[in-house]
Length: 291
Length: 234
Image 1 (cartoon, each protein chain N blue to C red):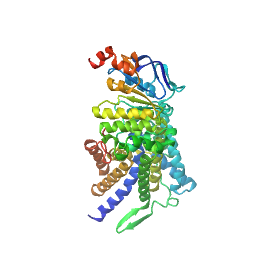
Image 2: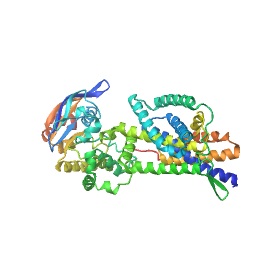
Image 3: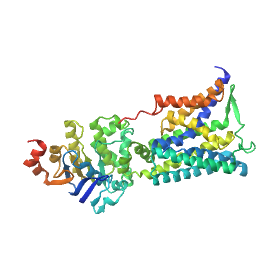
Image 4: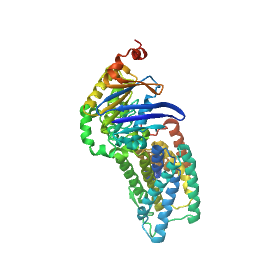
């Protein structure tokens, strides 16, 4: 192993944490609510641009934007789910409708912030250039923090899903919504709260993207090739799976970039997606459900 | 306690029940028997709030259940043990029981009820961390009844509890149902296993093609010649 490859692996693991945060919201709404919500890509993008704007206009540290972005994302998720409930949207329709929402927000973003690249100024963004060395390997602080958040989300969601009545209700709804309802679970209320939580996660991912990347409205198209492999490989609705799959996809894309150049990264991630669909469509980290 | 009056129901445009009247008194075990396809499960689903009645009313202790969403029917004191058990297979046994205790009144007394359920079914403690889907059919039925008891129902609704179980297990399950009833829970049991059900219940209704065709004392029906001919081939 050479240094370049080691560096690619470490960076891949850390960026995998960000991929997990970007994917966990889509995974949860798809796995639990049977809504394939492409609008999550819009909220990742909006989270990033709102962070950029707050930092640029008000001089905020980008991470302080979380206090606006988290409640904003939650509210957006609540509103979307209420709409999906009222419109009685099924899984396939949700894909089409949320693609429409995605396109609308795409235009909104382009109208407000134009198609030019935007980047938070180095004066207000301490994270961009911050890094330290472990041996010969550089660790970028921005991705390290994102990785920490991904781990926290995975642990927090696992505790929430297994230890609380809300979490047990979520899992019961996945398995048998009718019987869950018969035992007093308000399926709509649980769905609305979960959608809020999921969208808040997506918006949080945007904050981290803003800390170390240049923003442009079209960057969200590139996320499809990362998020869907992570969601499928991790297993629908699995937060721990999203973290594991995020790391796998991050490392694979990083190593591919190092070995064969940046254009090969998407090829590799899509190959992972195809392989996952062929050989393990239920995901690496979930049991095959049996009754 | 439970008064069902003039209930008609069905699926889509296909009517499955016509003008059903059924009563369950406090502390009673009542059975609804009939052949496959008679409409028994439809009836259970209407009482549990899972299907809407087309007309008629279901009243429990003066409260009309027919007007409530299913999530609130449970809170009024009706708990269902559905046909085929329908546990949450990937949830542990304990989690399945906790879903039973979901509605606020039951949740407040969760630990107390759990003690009671585990004394009736020691299996829920022995297998507490196993996935419900990995249990045997008999064990699953016990957990399904346990889950219903966690809701602290006044009325326990059992839909074909003997389905797919070995006769010796069926006997155990029916003994437990009797025991549960003796502690004050009323029971409405829907069964194809006519003899066992009539031996368990004090009163019975016979459902055929969506209509009540006979009703009365369970022992009398058990000894009734025409019923014996129809159901036991004697």
